[in-house]
Length: 378
Image (cartoon, rainbow, N blue to C red; front, side, top):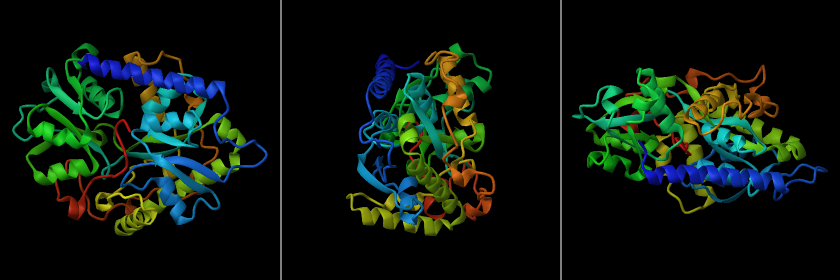
């Protein structure tokens, strides 16, 4: 089971969500429109060395006259949506479990569009050393699993994997979950300080290129293609700035479809130029590993099932009470014109031409199955 320190961190996180909710309910959102006119500037946080979908949409001209105002880089998805909930920024993105937690703690927010997920090109894998005796879910009992945070994407995938193998909740708890910084996860596995490492994106590809590890399972193998994270805005912002919200959400939806329909090399080149132009003293080299944002639905449309997964899992864990949140209150597709009937549909032809499987160990410089978008607790 998780360490005492990890449990304390989880409680601290839930407390922060409660503070965020209180701040939203007790005061006006900083910088919010008066309602007489829609703001044309959206404050947001970015990720070092990465190009978010809003940044891509802006560069493609899909945000029309709406401008993005970068206020700094975020440290995590939960932190990003807390900033949006308290009005320090105008939108934020995180894995859907964090969105559910935030809403469950009373924050009046709504998810407006999916922005990352898992597919055959973008996924997180649970990796062991090649000579490891771990071959099945039951083999994980008593073993240490390193992940970037607890109570998030990776822990949920581990729980689902164990429960599908017929293990009880009590038995599943025997797989010890440990927080390990992503940049140290591969090394920690190779030094045998942990038995299983959750790896994704460039960190996974580099580890596979080095060799000596194999996948136990991946989130894509477990659930198929699914959207895992959403951008949200406060109810107040949506009410006061519906036109801007529509331009933003529709523009991001168009950027998702542009990334599907455009050859990967062109997408990477465009992203690289964006990073160079914004002059944030960051390394654009990891962008060469990008393959997909992993969004499952057309233009990021939210179906509800992406959030239902987390509502059920969090309730089962006791992190939220059953019935504490109403699924339909968590999201809206009202502002996403790109996802409405008649819009562009996702196409497999937009993906890299060379097929690969979730267990691929091909050289990442030739055909990677990675994604540079933040995941798993982000």
